[in-house]
Image 1 (tube, rainbow, N blue to C red):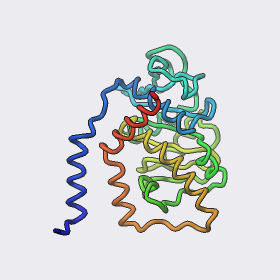
Image 2 (image 1 turned 45 degrees about the horizontal axis):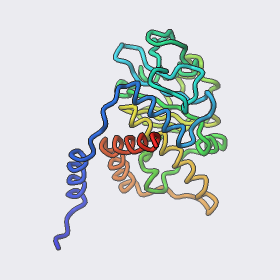
Image 3 (image 1 turned 180 degrees about the horizontal axis):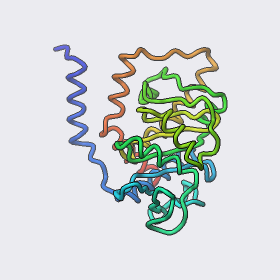
Amino acid sequence: MELRSKEYFDERATQEMRAHLKPRKRTLQQTLAYACRILAMTGQEAGLAGQISARSERPGAYWTLRFGLGFDEATEADFIEVDQDLNTLSGTGMANPATRFHLWVYADRPNTHSIIHTHSPYVSALAAAKQPLIVSQMDMTPFHNDCAFLAEWPGVPIADQEGVIISGALGSNRSILLASHGQLSTGCSVQEATYLSVYMERAARMQVRARTFGPLTSLPDDLAREAHDYLLKPSIVNGTFDYWCRQTER
């Protein structure tokens, strides 16, 4: 049998996934509602502390879950469009005041179209211990050289300065662990931000559990980079999101 290169199989898998993993079409509000249910299903509910947003087609505005609702009860009708001063432009209700720092992330990152912030259990454990993520297992590789760490808590992010600090610390990374706080995941789509948020909590849980066996060692850079790029292929991200959507429907 001919021994083929990994590049051959990568390209073949990419083409086949494009052909067979067709993402389901939804409105932005429907996608946001599913994302909220996925976050709740995966244990990322923390009262009213979590936030989700998506960039609007209107410049300087974004869609977010109206304040007062948990992820588990969100419907597509519960999303409002707000401007740079958090004034409601579409829908009824108010934005979570803590989403103000989302404005700075969107302003600094034109390719970011969705932001999710959670205080999920294992992420919060790492945050409380002020521990950055150590990419030591394959499922953690979406965060290889793609997860920043903010070592000092700037306080509740309801003012502009917190947005400047968090956005600056995030830099070009998709995700960030916020010491004494939680995590932030961004994406080119709601699907990607959700995917990273779910896998961030899984990675934190793995790290907390694995530490009982001793110190952790980061994966080799070349292999981790390869896995990072593979696991963040749009077909895999969107196919996984659709699977989680079906889980919430059941």
